[in-house]
Amino acid sequence: MPVPMIDLRAQYAPILPEIQSAVARVFETCQFRGGAELEAFEAEAASFAGVRHAIGVASGTDALWLAIKALNPRPGDEIITSPFTFFATAGAIVNAGAIPVFADIDPDTFNIDPASAARLVSPRTIALLPVHLYGQCADMDPLREIARRHGLAVIEDCAQALGATYRGQRAGSLGDMAACSFYPTKNLGAAGEGGMVFTNDDGLASMVRKLRCHGGSVQYQHEMVGINSHLHAIQAAILKVKLRYLPGWNAARREKARRYRELLNNLDGVRLPVERPDREHVYHQFVVRISRRDDAVKLFRERGIGCGVFYPVPLHRQPCFAPWTVNVSCPNAETAAREVLALPIYPELTDAQQEEVADAIRLHLSQG
Image 1: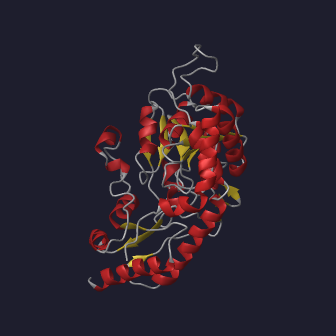
Image 2: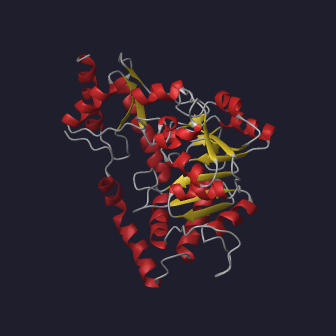
Image 3: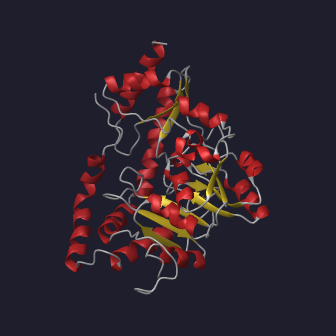
């Protein structure tokens, strides 16, 4: 039985009439940028995240860049982040004019280790940038205490964690700003690219809004150099429809994760994800550690089962960051990069498909 890594057709099929109606509204007005659709989605997204401001932008990468740029980094300023994440996190730091400093990860949650981050704070540090990887929030209280003690900003990368909670508080509301992605495969995905910056700070919100519009709030008057980064009205209209379904979809992902735990419990050679009791994981990815990982990937592909390796090369080992990582050691991230395997998980995944995945893992382990 083929098992795709994700099935967007299955997601869209039951809501397609609503999506088509939302897109038709945009064409009725021909307000393709800005306007009522964007403003309505921004308001609903802000309410969902529990913040005052939600600012739609063109991508999650742009959201990261805009949030960092709003801090006005100067040459030599440093931002501490995780090496075990998608490239955009550290790429945005460099493109915004700062230096990425990589702290090691907690081997259980794959998120940034606050103790490692604390050791890296220097007079040049201006911010912490924790990533809520795979759908589980980083350990924010000790990170916020580090920031308070040293006068640092905190920017969340919640690209994979919209709807996740940390001690009852939703991702996106746990720092000074947060960057979110609406890439199509995310828990809340657009029909293309999209992103958002969340914040409770009026001044930072104003800065981000200017920066996303070439650095100005009045047409043809530019207070700074920004970029052109807008969440288009069609994407906002689609996302507004889908946002209503997100709590149910996240709950379904949690149920699929529970089922995987039943199927894979007590298998030697597989380590299941650790969900901290003070957090609600939304399982953007269900990531196991598995022995002989690359052989498992080959077996999955032979059997038509989707899987992913997120991420095979930690960022501190990427050539483009070499100028800042000569003596950097992140052994937990490097071990994770050799062992992690993401299994298919999405609300529409069937019991039979999950059993097919579990059978493939058992077969792999039997060949060891």
